[in-house]
Length: 163
Image (cartoon, rainbow, N blue to C red; front, side, top):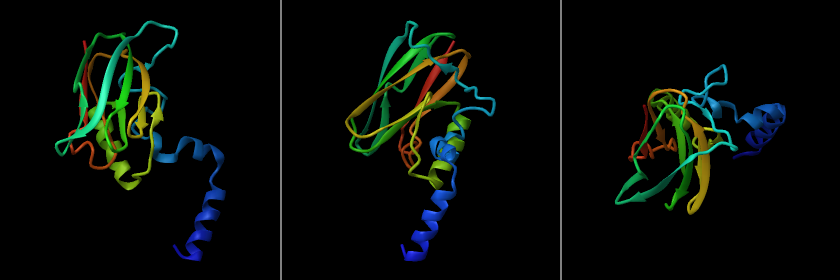
C-alpha cells in the first residue's frame, strides 16, 4: 500500500463514527430484520431451562461440515447450542433462513474479514468453542451455515426443523 492510500485509509477510519465500528457496518445485514426481530426466533433467556445441542465444525476429506447436520425442536423450545470448532480453519455458525444466509454469504464474499458474534451467529477460531442460546418462537425450517467464503459451498450448512 503506498503512502497516499495509507493516509486515505487512516482519514476514513477517523471519519467513521464509533457506533459504526461497534456495529461492523454491513455485518448485521441478514442477521435480523429492520425492526430488530430475527427470522428464526429470539435470543434465549439465560435464566430459563435450555436443551443442550452440541454442534461440531470441522474439515474432513476435502469437505467442511457441521455435525449433526439437522436438529429438530418444538416451537418455543429454548436451545443452548454448544459450538466447537475442531477444524484447522476459522468457522462460523449463523442461524437464519436460507434466503437470509445466502444474501449474507454474498456480502461476506465482498467483505471476507467480517466476523460474527451476534445472538444468532458466532465465529470461532480453530480449536475453540462458544455458545448461542436461542428460543425458537416460530415454526418452520431454518438453517445454520458457515458464511465464510467457500465454506457453505464446501458443505457447511445444516437445518433446524421447528414443529
